[in-house]
Length: 512
Length: 57
Image 1 (cartoon, each protein chain N blue to C red):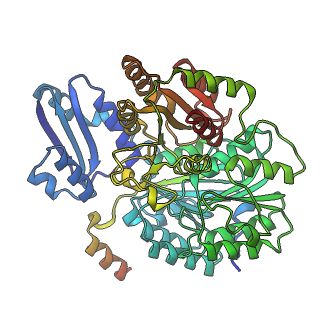
Image 2: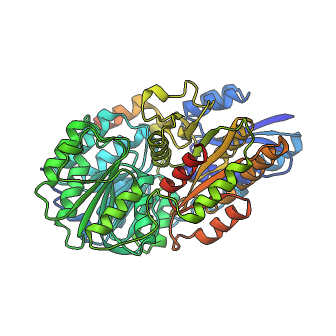
Image 3: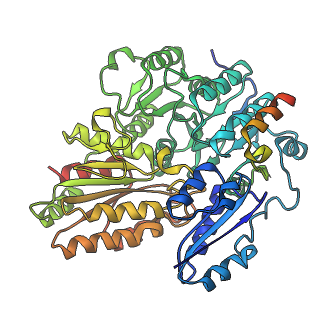
């Protein structure tokens, strides 16, 4: 085994491009491990952990590209490193014409710009977002790991200046039919939605589309917006905008539990609205139902879609967590295949909201589940890398995405965890989510299907049966071909549902 | 009360993308006016230098 590396000074690439390049290099015959990354402190630590240490690496800066290889021979290392330009082809296709380096350069080319989409590493996000706001531009801030004090400062500035800051940690928005970040391709319509949860917004807008309705705007706020620290600054601005928007006829809010003071503020604000407002605050429980008279409350995203359609005077069948006759029959069939010892569910999620909503559905069914993002701290995993009893893991949590692309873009990190879970002979059910849409993996099922097949075979070899259940979030208009993704899953013996609520509900009943 | 005074929801989007290039590609694929900034950490990522730059500018 040989180790080799090269450093290119002042050659910066974004994390998504680096991941794609790393994937290509890792497929070269004889390459055991590879890392293509920028010289940040956390990346240098990662390299050290896999046994790559060198004074030159220590000196690298966040602007310096590091390509590291662990391979079977020196020849293979030279084959890759001596021809590095080949692997970086296409990196600058979009920019080669202009070579724009700053926001000011961008404004020179697009003086009428009205939105800046920012996805730089979290430590630089405040600086770029503040500059954009000071130039009178709205901001979509995808970057995560931004301190709450910086988020508050950005949002206060935006509020004082009549601007909108979507984020930080904002995965999804759809403005006038344009999907920004991770968004699904949905038809235009008269339903407006505000979401403190990217995958929650994706699920809601996809289910609306799949039910035959459409979206006017879906405004992401960032996951911390409804905390009492932030006070819902963006949510309130977005709600006001949707109330005034002539296209929007009904408004929904999708979020994890908000701060209680903020929730009351939202309730007071929408009490004067002319349009119905549906609220899905996952994990909230029923404690505040009486105080939230101005909001039509929905326990999960499916029910929020149902309530929205009802508010428009429409009806739709098949949504919600209740199982149909065919699904109940499938349930009994699966249960009959488990061994006596098999009793636990493991969830390996790309979408944070899916992990959270599934926990709520299990909890409502009387099943306590551990998680790295638990509904209650009582159910926090002591080591997020090691599951115990019933466990649902959010692989898109900040913990797993520092210096690494989100699992919606790169499923390979989830691959390892799926196999780990299947090695536990007490596990009966594996629950996963597949997320389609703009900027997501071109083949999210393909990223993990081999792991699913191997996991099922592993259980079979032991004489057990691993039931794999998946929800697919997306529409028939997403570029990944939803029908094909579902077909591949089903051919591998995976039970597929159109919503996370229903998939989780099915799993909960499997454990009865 | 929070008010967005620039009517973002009712005009065509013109977007400046800073960071992940793929986001710009997906926007141009939707026929949105977008320009991508070839961003890299300012001052080589040196925090002290960045603070100094911010104070000067």
